[in-house]
Image 1 (cartoon, helix red, strand yellow):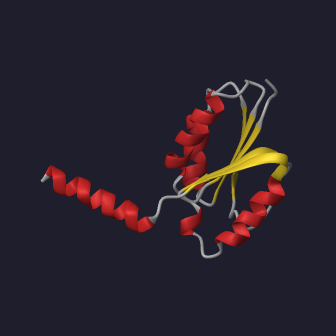
Image 2 (cartoon, rainbow, N blue to C red; image 1 turned 180 degrees about the horizontal axis):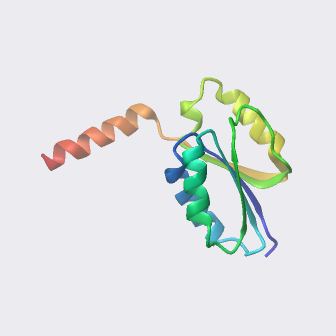
Length: 128
């Protein structure tokens, strides 16, 4: 299997997104790379700590994803619970497309906020 380059956009919720990237990277060849972008310095440090002992090459950048600055082209661009937090998700999707290699894959995992909140409330009611 060829190596893959994964590019993950996060927004001050790095712990949640890192799980997704860790799972994905565990399935990829060791020559693969991971680049994580987050606006929060704290979440960048968290990501560095979580990925410190991984066998693949990692890069973390503390910056706003709106300010496009991908340093290359990526096979996979991923975000989770990210677009719904943005004032201009279409702009971000355009940035993601620019960062993508031809034939690459964009993975966006977004939960409907109303459904997400309703599900949480139902879980809490069942426990009371």
